[in-house]
Length: 222
Image 1 (spheres, rainbow, N blue to C red):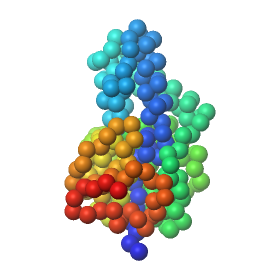
Image 2: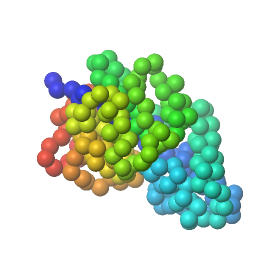
Image 3: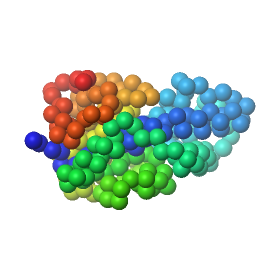
Image 4: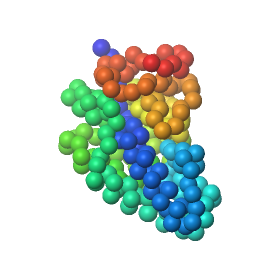
């Protein structure tokens, strides 16, 4: 049984189904400024850095706030929602817990900011994540490889020996660019096939020993 040297987890849409929280906050913000935020526009923001998402909102609405102000508003709304209900994705906690039991280190690699990552970490057993990389601590966010390279470095593993789990095209590109074999679990948006990544419909029922066996020369869907 070949286990990955580490598992590198995306957060929003992968560990937790928070994308509806983000989309709801975006719609409320745009509506407060007299506009309508469509689902299609909201999907443009999925997987991006928060500042990039904020700029997309500003460029496509009458919101007159700065990108930083937009980010602060969105974080506040999503944090409130997470504190009321943590919407776990199917199979995510179970797979994470199995990795911990097996002694395989996990890292959280998210473009959400530390305050949101801390909320997720606090809702899990202590020691679930050996490292946390957030959007407010990296110089280049996803799809740049820096977040995943940083996580691999913090865990002292080679990127090619780890496995990343993502749900968005942007995040998948980031992990693949870092040289991490990547499992895409599309949720809110589709993830196009790409070399270095495979797709599964759900983490439910997936075991740690299954992860490294998913990969072949061509992108496939299970």
